[in-house]
Image (tube, rainbow, N blue to C red):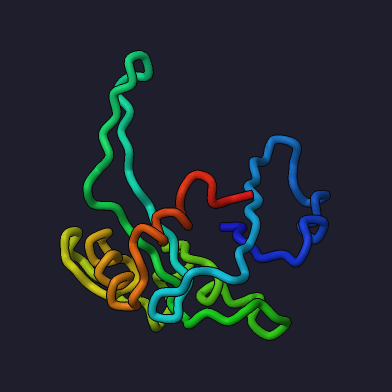
Length: 142
């Protein structure tokens, strides 16, 4: 709800946003790493039990979410098609190209993939997993 692509933050129309409304603005990466010609993101799940001392557990199986359309740089003809640019499940699940998988541990090449499936896709595209980890690492955003 309310997810839009903008050319510039001023296009948001701040007059329409109330004082108490929360918004998130993210910088669009227009030259993304593509797998199967699609933009994607990674979700890793961490449980923090204690900060002092630090006790945290990283789930071994994360999630990769893929757009349902092949990536094209944004232009006036495709800017309003979120299935090309955004990985949100809520936007893509209704697209005819959405590839559903009902098994959490299933290895697949669908629109949602296990981390294990994702790494197989990375290797199938002859990418170095260490390089991909550095791309998504904590220092990857300006």
